[in-house]
Length: 103
Image (cartoon, rainbow, N blue to C red):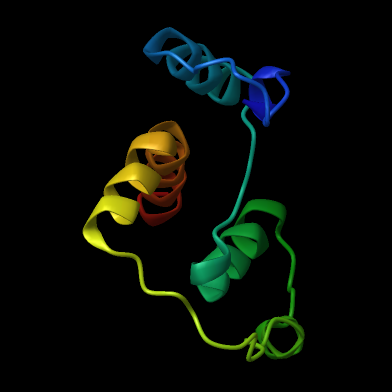
């Protein structure tokens, strides 16, 4: 919703058309992005893209995982609701992951 200029807490429901328009805009503007869970690949991508030499070790040290406590395990209903309510976020994440892995 946020990338569409909508209040992300609002009641607007994202549509397939919204998603398609967003992807078209990303492609048209040639927007670059990375994936935090694949930080090393993202750094390689940025280094190749901008002929840069970002030091992976220093970046990776600043992104160390911190223990934030215990994680709640979702039951099947909660998991299915999370997937349903975030289907376009998941779809956009998969799009970004595919772009990074197939560069």
